[in-house]
Length: 597
Image (cartoon, rainbow, N blue to C red; front, side, top):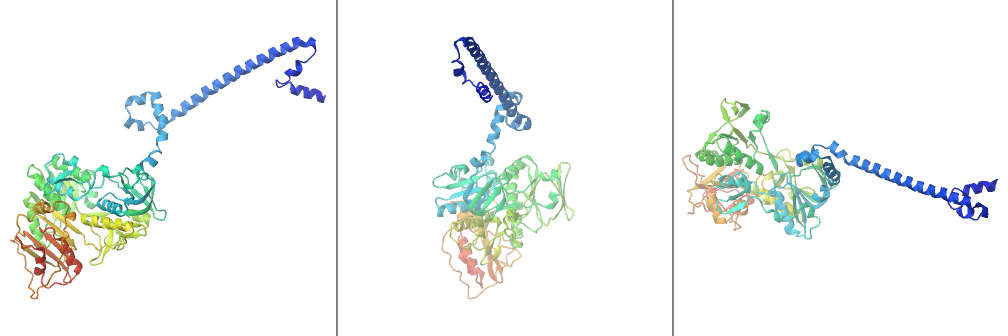
């Protein structure tokens, strides 16, 4: 029985054929029948396997097609904005791009963004560019990545409220090129696109370089992990980081509460896009009202006022002070400046406190606290700057409660590998105390110093930065230190000549960027007179052609304005640095050669 079982088990495979072929001679018919049955079985089995495999292939292909068609059902809106309408109608064509799309989604992360930057600069303004240039000067192989939420490469902001408005080129809003007061043409951009390395090549380029990631905002800083997170959740690590986020224009609360009709007719002037928008408004509307009497407000008032001479544009400027630049200039000079602005065709409303803003009958209506009402087509709010310190919370950085901005030490450090420069930095001035400065020259100098310190220089911030403002090509001033109209002032003036204008000054220096036109001449030490005389009291009738205004604190000069006096900033800087008490400021004023013809 056991043998029979084993024999039956061996009949299942094809191997027992050899055993059956060795049977007795009378068994040949059985063998033939067996071969026939086995052959038929093989043919049937092969056919069955063929049909099965073919069916499986068809079902597999149907499954693949069904899966491939799913993106068309889930994401129907995406192709609408990018592809022609007929692609959505043709299912086979639409299915093919849909199968590729999932593979393309993660691709931008490694391609567009470097995962690591040895030097990471947050912000794309003047301070960042100055830092990048300084880093590369000290470390020629450095790889520097600038991240900016603006769509533009680094550019200078002063021309946006100055020279660009006086260009006679109708395409200036597109080219952003302008003639300086000296007649030379230049672009607002510090460097052309060819100067920069593309972000995806930054990690691979042999000698390093500077890359700019535009249109991206850093929303989180992990100080311990040395990395930042962008608004699209991309993470980039760094070795050393500079925060140069600048600031955003302040707005009036009454405008913010006024509703959409008012806010869309209000410009907060800061960026290239703001210049382009306001330029268009000035050509399309009949009246513009500027709220603010400081640097920006007065510059824009003069620029738009001069443009109104060739059109029927009405330009109004209003502010709470008694005169233009009332917080900076002594009253007599502020009044003179107001007269100058009015002569440019601007209606100036002083001591104007805005109570309410509304939109009625196609006009923006501004009600003042004294009952006056101004109706206009468009409003420009030029009421100051708020430093951008949103990263302070995630980074655990200190914000100064008095001046705003990131609080840094004398080396502009907020942490061991984090520096801050420009408008957002609240630094300690060894001569004038803790300060925060919002001017171009400070952005240049602080950015440059931060870049040096990021490469190991360990230098303190000794520099007294300057700033300037031009009311057109004929009147301008440069200032340094603390210039506050609430401080005692002494002004020494002389009659101006044709060379005492911003235009003449830039013609002589060859550049229109005032912070770059400062001469390196030796600044002589001021010599006090042995017989002090009382400072002259300016008279209202004077036209104050050119002069020097000293700002005093405890009888020591802490600020200086050079009124239509140019390229003398090293002298002013030395006077403030010396910190001495001067018996006769008339003698000190002679150091500026204001009496020369």
